[in-house]
Image (cartoon, rainbow, N blue to C red; front, side, top):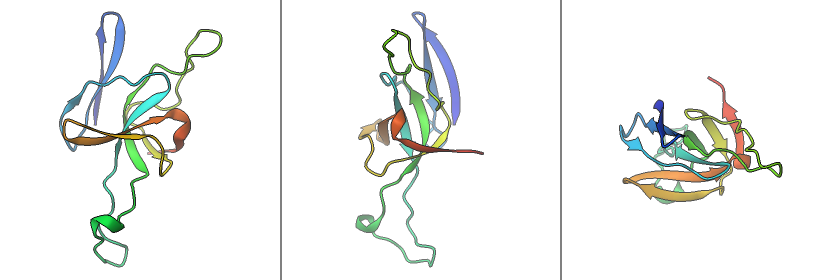
Length: 120
């Protein structure tokens, strides 16, 4: 995944090009929300049995493609996010809202739905 920042009208927009799709995504989540590209669901079990679509588990792992500016605190400042673009994360099974954009599948989740960040 290639990540770069672009400044438009004084605001920095995080832009990302996913390696699998090679498409540019112009998307800015609000507050503490993240746009995550889910990993592909496993098609085979460890024993080599091919799973039909109906038996596949919903992915719980993905790559952060875009992040919001942070949660608005009572003091009027924005809270800093602990997740950044390009991080591989685990999130709750039924967390977030699934969307299709440019024929690709994404999930919009809140930062507190992130269970773990994968260290590389």
